[in-house]
Image (cartoon, rainbow, N blue to C red; front, side, top):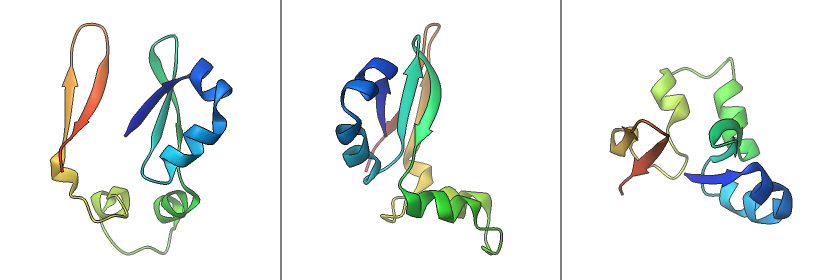
Length: 85
């Protein structure tokens, strides 16, 4: 998962699009997560009401990575997901 500031996003939308092809891009505003850019296939998978499966299956990366590999570290100032493959 890639994190970009709103300024970075505005300066390089093309880079954000390239990153979104591999996974969600979190766009921050004043250091806080504000938006998420998703590839259209990921968005459709999340919003497909006919999809039979658990929420974790719907959120799972399309490349087959396991959600159990995602850890969230928190500190007093910010959080960032840590993904290990």
